[in-house]
Image 1 (cartoon, rainbow, N blue to C red):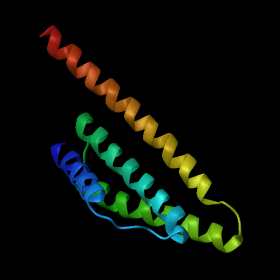
Image 2: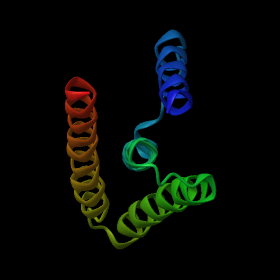
Image 3: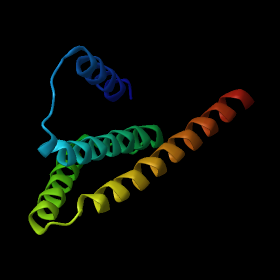
Image 4: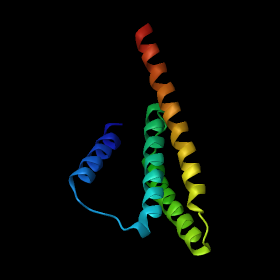
Length: 116
């Protein structure tokens, strides 16, 4: 569980220390890719806490989610509609759901530890 959190912190530090700007054309793609990556990261943390973590599922899910989100954004741009909003909604709901489950699992582990 420490490895995903470590790489999240490392990525944030590198992002804040560098002065790289993303062109506005790619803003929709990047926002969806980041949201999909965060969804996968918190899903991995959740499954690790539940004792069901599978590295191959995590890695394949990461690349699949990011690719699918980028594809939805691309198709939306080609059609002239904001199709990326559907991906933002779906990944946002999953992200908050994963965070709620992580919170419940940690609270339950704390209660068990406190009672023992």
